[in-house]
Image (cartoon, rainbow, N blue to C red; front, side, top):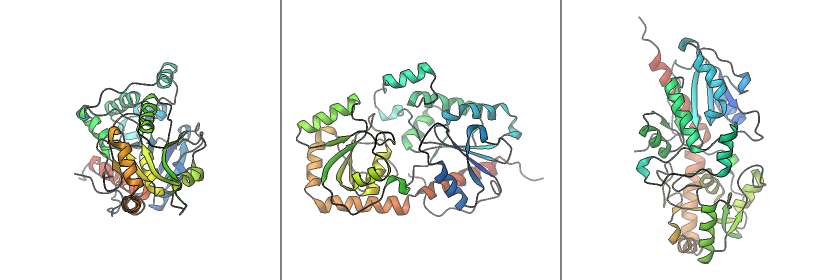
Length: 346
């Protein structure tokens, strides 16, 4: 059963967080961040919110630290929080959007780290972001007991944490215009894969699909440093009929799915484990690799069937599953947690 959709009506803020200033943490070493967008959304929800780098965050009771992305990036600050007496700590709301391992129940083989990921671990690079390091750090946060609300963007991630005795909330990523919009362009690119296609698994799948007769345009990655970002990416996806989703590891849900939905490209994906809030056959198409070439050809030949799914996905994403709804949901969860933790009067 799915939780309430993040964009549905939310109860008014209870007394728990009223008047609590919010520091939206941002890394100082990255060029592109959604932290300013988040702060603006929170201000629209009636909160005193600002963007803060790690050294700027105020650690005081009654304040909120909103930690998006990967809390491991802010481990020095969170260690300072853990060192404080409980009554002197701010509220810590973690929205973990980065990778975690698949739960054992999914039945997938263990995921192997890349050489780059191993090198970051050896060098103790701040940018460590592999699924196993992330999981170890969340287990540490759980032991320290400093997190008011821990939310994850995937039911698969929630299931993994539950297997390790860690309670979390499911708050999926919502749509924001930075994912793209529809421009009404001619869709002259039949099939596109946008992402790092030199990864061995993806390279083998793309080679297999090409042998099966698909003409696939595979380009760089969706990162801001590879040239397929912002308006350039939006225009590219608006020229695309079918966007392939080939996760780095089997079963995972990626932002690429929402990029396709936002720009009107039909997403054809390998099967995803617990893909909520999206539904295969309604918001996107799932296909095993062995059948993917035939699946893609059938939708290329049927404009009406393709448009039916892309229209449904676009409406769901832009009207019912928004970024504003996500943060309203996060604050609602934090508000309830704070209210529960406060001692009863008298």
